[in-house]
Length: 69
Image (cartoon, rainbow, N blue to C red; front, side, top):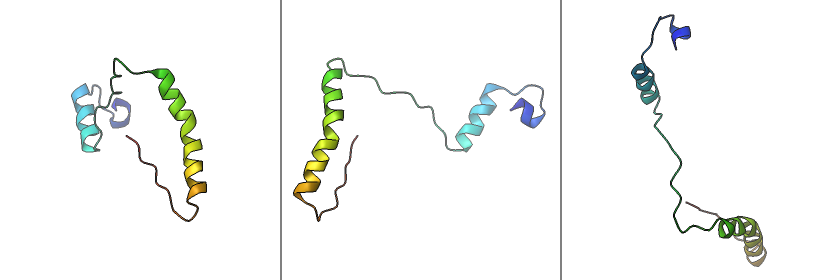
């Protein structure tokens, strides 16, 4: 910002104000649950496309929407 505006010193808070003005927010990854199983998650990721294809074959005239959180 100092280079763009030609100002010698721009404080960090000013940068934060500009980011907020642009509707940016502080984001960080979610914490992982203590009991989560990475192996089970990977199996789910690998099998999901296969399950969707099965549903598409079973109901060819229906449009399928996949929601996840």
